[in-house]
Image 1 (spheres, rainbow over the protein chains, first blue to last red):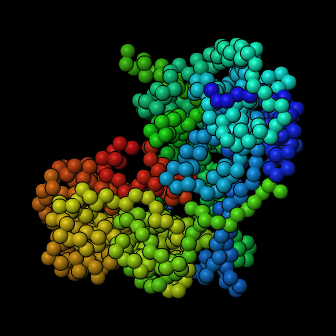
Image 2: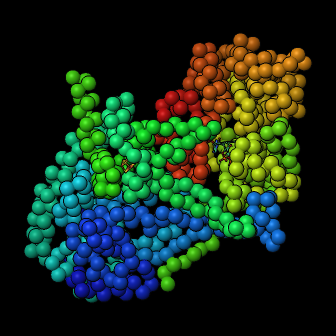
Image 3: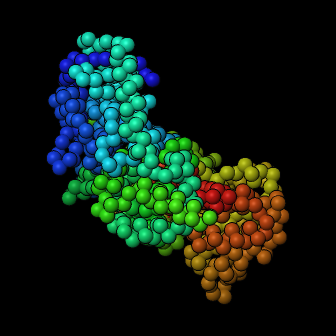
Length: 361
Length: 275
Ligand SMILES: Cc1cc2nc3c(=O)[nH]c(=O)nc-3n(C[C@H](O)[C@H](O)[C@H](O)COP(=O)(O)OP(=O)(O)OC[C@H]3O[C@@H](n4cnc5c(N)ncnc54)[C@H](O)[C@@H]3O)c2cc1C
Ligand code: SF4
């Protein structure tokens, strides 16, 4: 375990408020109806946001905004864009300094996953300019946030890394795990940082065993080990399950948008009416949307919803496992909460396993 | 306060390049010689591509058709089929466009050293292959036989006619040409590109094939190469998928577990089968 300290919540607030002078502070904020979203806050009191379920949109919006300018361009006097005239083009890289407060361990894991994808072979400057200037203050879940999350089945109810600080509620204090040097510096700026006492340690041990007990049923939501999922999706390629779920699925893309590990985008140029200046933008895109898989000559490899749904699960399991030895799903269940027809990944995995088992027996 | 908007390098920023020379090749295809404003060489491998930008219109992935040995700029050959590529038709010598790249993985040439090389190009597939063909011919002594099959729809859609004539005249190149349809003046083969296979006898164990053309052509060509006994590992293809970013992020070109733009666009047939 990472170095653990005890800090009074009041002292922690003071430190965070001071950070807020030079950085943007963001934390989950209640939107009513049991919905939360990350938004700018004044101090760390928002961290008290007890029992918040995963925010509508994951924190990826801070590193990969729903819409982002990549390039600004213009034509010289008297010329228009697209005509072959000389032009000016500048990369636009927004890089705010931010402190993300109250990031759940599932989202911490997701950020680590998108870091890998966005660094793979070519480093994405727009992503990392924001990512590198972000401080992540995580918040441990003491119990499952709702009945839908399947984080423990994906091993995301804990995080060993990927945060600067990870907080656990400790009454008037926080029990703080330090993940990075940056986290060390933050604590150094706090008054009254203490070592856990023998009593704290005992309580910590019992808290951990309570947590394990609370999360054990969550781990059961998927009937197979997560390491089996890539093979399961592979072996189930021709299963009738995809047709059944494909008939249900609306191909609306909502699940892609809210997914913390979906990072596909579309690129488009927008120009001023007089065609003398413009911006190249990227926007979130989703593999469940029809236009996504168009190929040369307007052919579409995944023109049916069942194929796109399967592609989504394949990509989250087989593809990412082959490439990163990791399954790009944290079990946050945002996809389920947003889905208009209640498609739930664990149901699909369980049904696939059952049918495959049935086939071979 | 906290927001800084930096102007800096980015993988998404196109670099300015100027059209040094332009030649119409067919009704629908134009050849361009480009040079970066900075004067830098592109530094590509045969089979790699660049993203061509007309800012305000969009971007299109285009294969580099010149060999790496060409350092005074580079060449592209573009078919005008839509938004970006149609407008490129109107650009003139001296005009500017934006380039990102080179991107992707080119053709693996190593397995062909010391062996017979078979090139099979269909239509626009000659564009990426030309870079490799020229590279092989520049290093002719490293290879044994060089066999080239090229097929297009009709005689007026032939690309690089001058070079085709050179290759035909070259005693070191076994050159075979075919068109799908023609008139009486045509002295070469008539039929799809696979109809050229019976014209040569190949030593399959010692042959490495590079195939480039529309997807439908691949299917028929690899049937032939497989039947002849050229191994899947020694058969190389270049895949064309819709792509946006060119750097393995945007997700559009995913095929199984690979991003065609990043792990490809050139693959061995063994790799393609495993997708
Ligand atoms: C790796 C790679 C190398 C290529 N090399 C060349 C080349 O050397 N020369 C050449 O002329 N073309 C090449 N292409 C195809 C070229 O990228 C497309 O023709 C171009 O993107 C079309 O853009 P557009 O804006 O003009 O057309 P759009 O208006 O976007 O579309 C017009 C038509 O082109 C198809 N299309 C759109 N985008 C693509 C795409 N990325 N790939 C294939 N078809 C597409 C559409 O389905 C539609 O039928 C290559 C494509 C790839 C992926
Ligand atoms: S949110 Fe539901 S209906 Fe919409 S694409 Fe995803 S699975 Fe299909």
